[in-house]
Length: 175
Image (tube, rainbow, N blue to C red; front, side):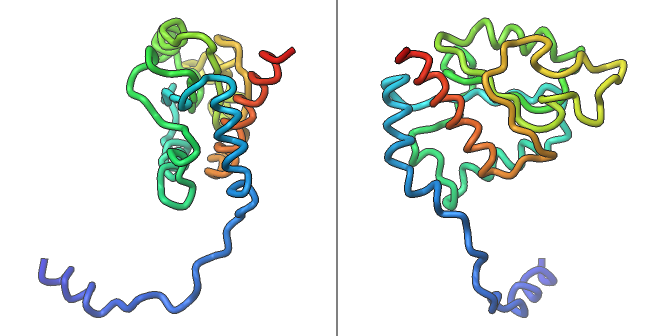
């Protein structure tokens, strides 16, 4: 403990400025929030499912809740049960052990069901494609509304994918 306190006392605040962020999506915050309200009439609730990932995608998804991305400010929140969710955000290759659990989560999710596959593994199987313990991409089991490629995809791409799924559903409802 003493060593840690000494290290903290010796460490100074970083002198370099914070990296410039991509703020274009922040200007659209009101429109994003309105799209969510038009489709659902309330906040977008997401159930995140790890179908066998390495947790790289989960780290990026957790970054969406930090003050920089602030997805709760956009009216998006994560829930613990698929029964309370509007969207399933699935990461990882679909493993044999998680196949039935993912299917039950989909069946428990009320309409309108949105499914987003996040990461190369959920989109195509990634480096696990063809493995004996993997069923293949998520689209082999469920109808996927949006795929977000990347290993892992950055938080801004995950946010864009979530918003694209909502906008696609909105367009389908207004036809």
